[in-house]
Length: 174
Image 1 (tube, rainbow, N blue to C red):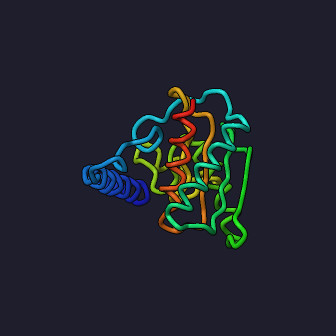
Image 2 (cartoon, rainbow, N blue to C red):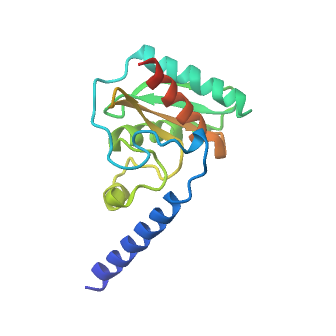
């Protein structure tokens, strides 16, 4: 009984914290919500193609260069979370190789951004062995369907911005 009550209290705190954070979004284009960032996860579509995955990597590398975050690893996964394309820069930390792949896998499998999960799926993903609770995994959505995901690691605070830019580039190209 104690553990059930404690779980309910923790869920209530998580819901309150998440709702408060969502109400404090800054203005501008960075506050535009991508599919899978909040709300209902987009359904699965056909898996990402190699050409689309390569487009995501080019966009991620371009954004990383713009942000002066060069030592990164970039992984693109299909709808099942399996690796389609991967690249790492010359001086990327070894652990970033694994984290980029885990972020892409997690974002593809739950069709949501990695980091703090929304309250409606928090309990489920907390027990998922593949889920990574750090920013940088973003689902790639084209025509309202999740076709895969990108994971970026090694840029510290810029992982999410780089992954978002890549997801937007693929979505814009269709």
